[in-house]
Amino acid sequence: MKFIRVGTRGSRLALAQTGIAIAALKKANPGAKFEIVTISTKGDVDRRPLFTMDEKGIFEKEVNEAVKKGEVDFAVHSLKDVPSDMAEELVVACIPRRARPNDVLVNDKGQKLAELPAGAVVGTSSLRRAVQLARARPDLKVKPIRGNVETRVKKVIAGEYDAIVLAEAGLGRIGMKDVIVERFGVRDFVPAPGQGAIAIVCRRDDKKTMTLLRRIEDPKSRAEISAERALIEKVEGGCRFPLGAVAVTRGGKLTLYASVFSADGSKNIKVAKTGSVAGAEKLGGRVADILLKQGAGELAEGWREAVEEWNKKA
Image 1 (cartoon, rainbow, N blue to C red):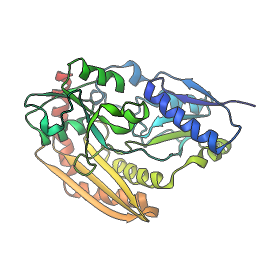
Image 2: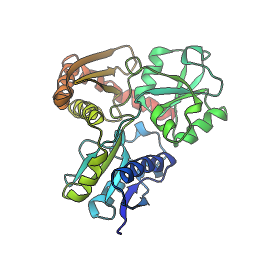
Image 3: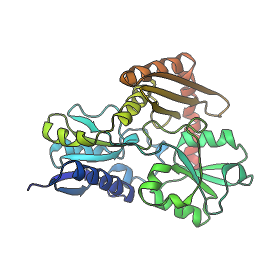
């Protein structure tokens, strides 16, 4: 039997996510055989903090290029790494069941955010997390951090940082949930759009692969992601503008929570709207319109100087 080739980054988390996807696919498609092909991306090679790179898709471009060229049959990504403007030839064919989208606090002293001493150094790779930390605890020192999940955790244990903020889903997928001290609520500490979800990308014209992948699609997760991505596409947040958004399905209803901040953290525009699961994209567009009407675009302009300041700290 011909092996189905799966493209992925070579990080521990990427391989774990690929393993999760393949296990589900084997269960849904008995007899199918898979071969993992690891591909290095710009994000793996360039060690600068993410917010300093003014481009999209640094963790997926090379992998998706391999899909486009037919070197692999499909690719597995963290969905939040996949830009909404992918190549026309490609499609997010499947979104399996999403893990918790929450951000979490990690340290080796068991201290929650409120318990960290004044002046404690907290690391994050995300401007969205940085500004929310600064709003909650302006007395902390928030510093950029890079490296894969396990590297960041090691930096806390080594004393380089007093704590870090990461996505709960990533820690869970590599078996490191025991380092979590505190889980932040998604309404109080709004995650990145798409956080916790896996995206499986294939060629749009590869109907056979698409059929195979869609057997593990989770409709609720698809609806949540559709709303979040429609929102971010309209607002055009990108890495340099901290836009938090999370959609939650309950029954046939979908509620989308969104939050944007000024560079100094003094201003915060929050929107929460509920719509039907079937109208997920429409809901995302509606929330984006409200954010823009309330001044989200003006807040975005103030972030250029803030990014330059963060570049100096990195």
